[in-house]
Image 1 (cartoon, helix red, strand yellow):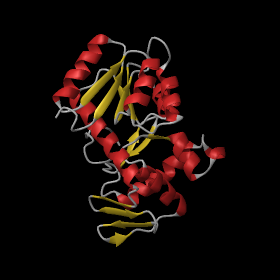
Image 2: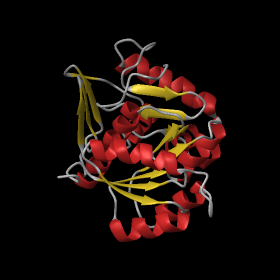
Image 3: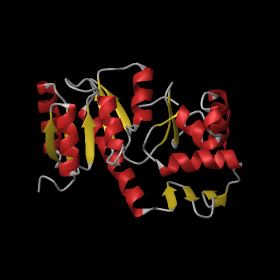
Length: 238
């Protein structure tokens, strides 16, 4: 059936882009609902409860950032921003507003589909309340606060563990520098990015086979970090 993989709400006012995305998504088994304004998108979100929202920021009535904030007031549906705005601050603002991911136009079909799979997997993890996280040879027992690599327990400092736990609980999602600093150190430290850089380097040395080419702890330059899940493309520099 067309909706076996999930239901995507596309909020995009550009007709050619809607057509391009509709062909890709329907061709890969997704059900697609379209909205051309922010208000229409908000209404469709409430009525249809989609699995993922693809959201353009440059809408004709209200900015996509406002749509994101309003959705987040009552809904945790994954939001993937698709926008021609490519400045780092645009991405940071969208993620801080509650978006799960950000794709800059133009982008390829493969990358879009991979981001959708990751967003849906992350949402499933949240709904099922997964408490033991396993990927490759890394195992994290969140209730017991234990970390194992290839069966060997790894000692992390409290701050290192906080950072890892936040990233794992949001696996696949970009977490901004500001969000990570707030979670690990508290609101007064939201601008202290040098702290974050030092601790992420320490974490990589403890958890990555090759810290210079990490496979788990991926840097989004100028924006933040994400814990990489299966299905993401190998497209980012460390």
